[in-house]
Image (tube, rainbow, N blue to C red):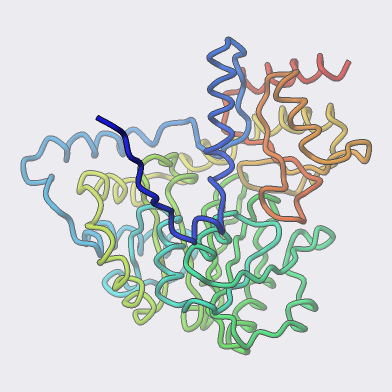
Length: 394
């Protein structure tokens, strides 16, 4: 039979975004590996360590139950909401009502989508940090919002440039995305920044959303935006178990906000998904309530500290400058002036040293002369990457 193709075109919105950088680049890495190149990936922040033993045990236990496999409430099980509220009280000292101020998420990306749908009409504006997580920009564009970038200041620990923000026309801004501790720069959370964000939100009638998945990584003092008095009136915070509990593939996150904001986001969410598998929810609740301070210190501070030593040596070998005060599971460094652009360096490292590191331009124009090294690889792999790069540079 003759194959007649229909003249079908994709939606116009697809022209506003590209395929996610890592989705594209990992295809190239897979091809190089198929050719026997054995690429070491220091690019993606996907923890390679397992969750706590009792977390996995709980998942297996629930999975064997006959009554665990049906649809679950979009709002999440009471056990999970209670555990999330307990987690906020235990680690941040923030009191959260589990029935009305917690919404479990299938990861923070889902939360970005649902929150934007709940608050932003097409044509309205969102403030997005530069540099910042690419999904803040791409999802805003797909949903018809106008992205307005605000600069993060390297000379001030990658905190917002308040003078620039105060000079902007904010009349059409509905949301402001923040991310502290910051990814990709490693700038740590500061209570003074959180206080100014709450003041900024109140003054300009803007909802500030702080994305907070890195507060435990290489960080002895986790902070939350919601520790600021009155923050829940005008702010939302996302948190995630991907990084802090070694559960990236489990897709368990949380949204904490006042009951009104939660009800609006739930209205969107309930029309899109049907809840997470009960075993995942109960195992996540187990991790949130039973993982000890010693477990978090071993998994999130000691282990990453050992890996960070290799990342710092890689930066030094490449001639990059970096701030030792960074936190989080990456190391962010500025490339030497001799390179015309960051890909000149990252492509050389990929094809000559067979090490995949991330070019900073994917996080915005302010990242164009930076690289990011992930700490999510075993010490042996990071040492091997260092030796390959040393050989390349000699």
